[in-house]
Length: 193
Image (tube, rainbow, N blue to C red; front, side, top):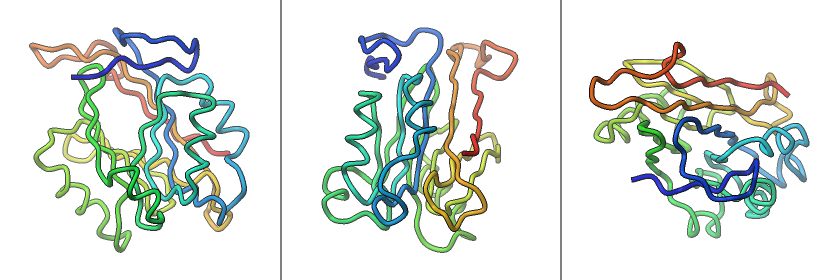
C-alpha cells in the first residue's frame, strides 16, 4: 500500500489520487564529479511530488540537498557508494504509486549485462517500470511490457551529455487493467542539461 506523499509543490501531505510527478536522478558521484547538484535539476525538482535517486550518491549531503527542495526522497545505494550510504539505504526498492509497481535499483557489473541483472532481480515483483543507473547513459525503453528507465548522470563530465528524468504517473485503472489516459498513464522524459 502506498503511503501519502508530501508534495514538494505545496509542502503539505497529500493522498495521490490522480497524478504524481517524479524527479529521477542517478550517478551524481558528489564530490567526485562535482560539488553540488546542477541548478537546473534543483529548479525542476521543486515542481515534483517525489524524487528518486538511483544510486552512486557517494556523499549523503546530496540527499540533504534533495530533501531541502522535496521532502519525499527515495534512495537506493549504488556500487560506488561508501559504507555510510549503504548502511542507510537498501540496494533495491519496490514502490506502489497510483497502481504502478516501480522497481528501483542502481545496478552493478558490466553495462552489457545490466538489463539482464535488472530483469532477474525484479522478476517476481510485477513491475511496470524499473528505474536504474550505473551506466551513466540515459535509457527510456519498453521491453517485454516493462519500461526500463535510466536518467543518466547529471554530473559526469565524461558522459556524452548530462541529464535527469521526469516521470508523470496518472492513476492506473484497476479491474479491466485499462489505463486512464491516451499516453498509457505513464510519461517518462529524459531532460538534457
